[in-house]
Image 1 (cartoon, rainbow, N blue to C red):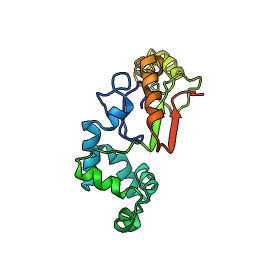
Image 2: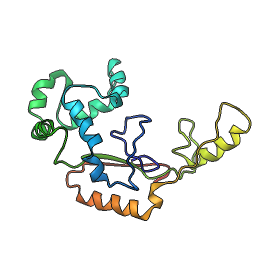
Image 3: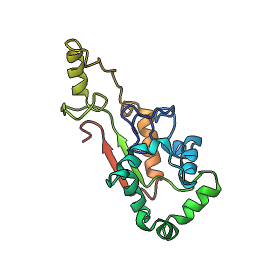
Length: 188
């Protein structure tokens, strides 16, 4: 989940717009949406979705990309892809999903939720979408330099009682969740 509640297929996907948002669509509904099913089907067919270009780029230079990390969580090793894929504890799920055009009976295992952008820090490597403090700074800087455009004001999805209730209800239904990353400003 992004700062404004938009869904991204993967935490390493950059700037991919989606029409689905946690304020209008539940997490589990999005996870089994046509968009996600098509995404899974592309990967299961051996194609590299456009959303995966950052990881494939990192792979070219021997970096441990997010793609490689997720493969390892499924017991799949690139150096022995075929055998490790067949022996993966998720192989039956992959096989079902392939035969079902990307649909899955699984729930998310790894989830990142950005809980807004309320933050007192203005870290140089950050962006106004992730730091309310940077929004203030960029507004001031945009008046002195064309290098800085005045940022949009982002409203956090956690301010919506329905969205937060829906998200928490969906989390309670996910039995296999192993990793929950809470980010977005100062989340705690």
